[in-house]
Amino acid sequence: MSLPSEMRAVEIAEAGGPEVLRPVTVPVPVPGAGQILIAVDYAGVNRPDALQRAGMYNPPADASPLPGLEAAGTIAAVGAGVSRWAVGDKVTALLPGGGYAEYVLTAADHALPVPDGMPMDQAAALCETYFTVWSNVFMRGGLTAGERFLVHGGSSGIGTTAIQLAREFGARVFATAGSSGKCAACVELGAERAINYREEDFVEVMRSEGGANVILDMVGGTYIYKNIKSLANDGRLVQIAFLQGPKAEINFAQMMTRRLTLTGSTLRPQSDEAKARIARELEEKVWPLLIAGRIGPVMDSEFALGEAAAAHAHMESSTHIGKIVLKVR
Image (cartoon, rainbow, N blue to C red; front, side):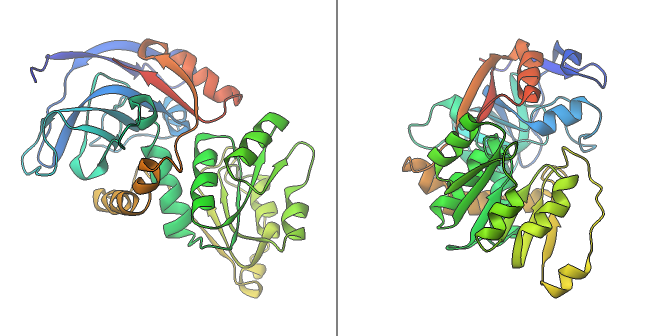
């Protein structure tokens, strides 16, 4: 594959709102040892991209400053020591950054094959959410069959993924969402009960069910205290974001008396090996479900690469259900 020297991309001109996303032309990156260069077909749009744009989630020092944490496309070049992949392979990949561009670099071990028959726009919507949900709900939260699982923001990309995976692995699934339409979408995906947080108290609902064994939360703020009240004895609260803020006043004595676990993680700062381990588990345990069509990304909308600002505005309006992607080529 003959590579150009320059590519179209979208950069963050300065910290701010969606309007600071600006189309630019930049050099095509060159893969180093253990890396692959992907010619991007589609890139996923995610909340961490908006946090980076706002100046609240800086990329690692060795990562591209361009936004974009997941993409799907064709391998255009491989670095030294890469044996699994070859030029021309179709992949979907977790990225350290740089996905809003025609070409992007990532570690070879962070890429996975595009599931048979899956369109590339859907493939681009897999990695950021599937890596996040699998590592937090199953690896960190230890969700098992028969347990009660509550996910907040059930109609988001994370939420729709978590509902499907928890359902497939035998959990009883509950979700919160902010409208009747979003609640209906959660139930259709497999939630036993969807709770409209504008009309019902999720604490009361979960306590009436015996409490949640695992909660996945990205809201924070007042939800931290409410989540703890919603947990069953030996329950696990897994925090992955703080849309309402990271601070709350809670009584930690109940951690001991009720044997609770409060944990959480962010994906981007983890080591290459940690991400590679998540990728291996996904390929072994989740990819067969994708190939069989038992689960899949819920797609909301598609924007052109140059319309990244509009894509961010749409995401931050919170009117979407599922994933938003950028069409790059």
